[in-house]
Length: 440
Ligand code: ASP
Image: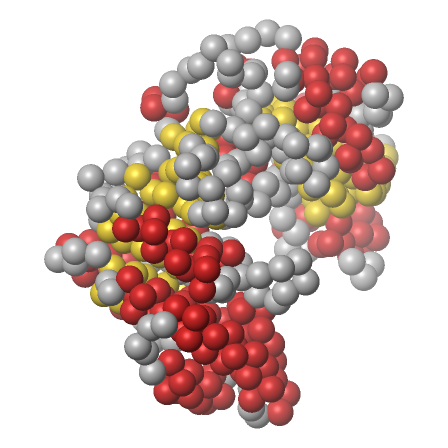
C-alpha cells in the first residue's frame, strides 16, 4: 500500500502544525511520499509566505534587493526550525535563497522558495529524504506541464526511495528555469506524484474535515460530503469551491486513484473521499445533490434573431467575434431564436463591451443584443440527478418560493449539473434556498 500525502499551508504554518504532520506520518507506514506547501496563515490577518515571496520579487524589480520582505521569510523559518529543535543550518540556506532571489529576478523562482524551504525543514524533522520538484516536474516553454516526461521522471526517481518529502507548487522548464503552477498548485503536485508512484490513495491534508456541500460563509454549518465523484469535484472546484485545485483531479483520474480530503487538526475525522464513478458506493442517506457552488460578476449577451436556427454558421460567427477579443466563454445557452453568451465581467473592461456588441451587430445582424450585467452563476451538482426525476422541479420551486428571479438556465447533457444565473444581489439567498430544499 502506497499513500501520497499533501499537506497545505495551514499544516505548515508553525512548529505545532508540523509536529502534528509528523504524528500523522508516523502513525501509518504506507504514508511514503509527502508533498508540502509553503507556510500559510497562522491567524486571520497573517500573510502567507508565498505572498511575501511575490513581494520579494516586486522589491527586486523596484529597488534591486528583496532585503526588506525577505527579513519576514527569514524570521518565520528561523523560528520554525528553532521551535522544532532540528539540527539544520537554516541561516545559510536562507542566505543562499535570498541571493538567488536577487540574482535570478523571476517571480516563479521567488514564489517557489516557500515550498522549497518548507520541504527542507520537514525532511530534516522527519529524517526523510528531500527530493527537489525541479528534478522531476517538467514544464514546456509555454508553462504547460509535460505530462509524459514528468511521469517518467517521477516514477524512476522515486522508485528506489523508501520515503521522500517533495516541495509542491513548482517544477522546471527545459531551459532550466523554475516555474510554478497557478496558486494552490501544490494540490496538482500531489496528484502528479500519486500518479507517478502508482499510489493506492492520495491524501490531501488541509484545515477542514472535507468538502462541504456549500461555502460555510454563506450557509451556516453546511454538511460535509462523505463521498463525491471526480467529475462532481471538477464542476464544483471550477465554480469556486476552494478545497482542492480544479486541475488536481486530472493526474489521479488517469489511474483511478481516490483522493481523501483530511483535516490535519482532526485526523480522526473521515473527511471526503473523491472517487471515480465506478468506485462510488451509493448510500441510503445520499441526497440527490452533492454540492452547490457559485461565482459572482458575469455578463450575459442575449442575442436575438428570428429564424436564427436556420441560419448556417450563426453561432460560429458570433464566437469568432468573441474570440477576436480574446474572451473566454463560460456558457452558451441557446433557444430557437436566441443565443446567450455568458462571460466573466472582468474580461469586458475599458470599452471592450461596447466594441464587442457593435462588432456582433455588424457581423450577424441580430434583431437585438441585450446586455445583462451583475449576474451570478450557481451550479447545483449531483450525479444522482441523472437517475431521478424532480430535481429541477425542487430547485425551481425553492427559488420561486424565495422570490428569486432566474435570469438564465443551463443544464449540461451529462445531467450532472444545473447552472442558473441570478442577479448578484440574490446570490446568498439563492444558495441558501437550494441548500435548504435538498439537504435535510
Ligand atoms: N503556496 C502556494 C500558494 O499559496 C501553493 C500552494 O500552497 O498550493 O498558492
